[in-house]
Length: 94
Image (cartoon, rainbow, N blue to C red; front, top):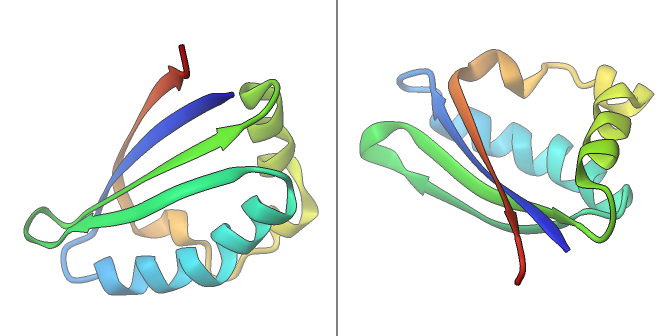
């Protein structure tokens, strides 16, 4: 299983909006596409959103398929518009 730890800094004052949109749009689609999702967590003072996404197989290819999907492209509003900075750390279970 491969994982990506994802950390986003969200526009000031918009963290709750991002969390809501992530739960309503991103999470259900990720789960429907076979991803494992751990989290999310927030650090309110820093307007930070953190989660872990995993996939049993080629995580990079699965992520590409997710981003290329009609469902992902149709997200409106797109939660990414609220992300100021993003960081992903690739992880794998030993």
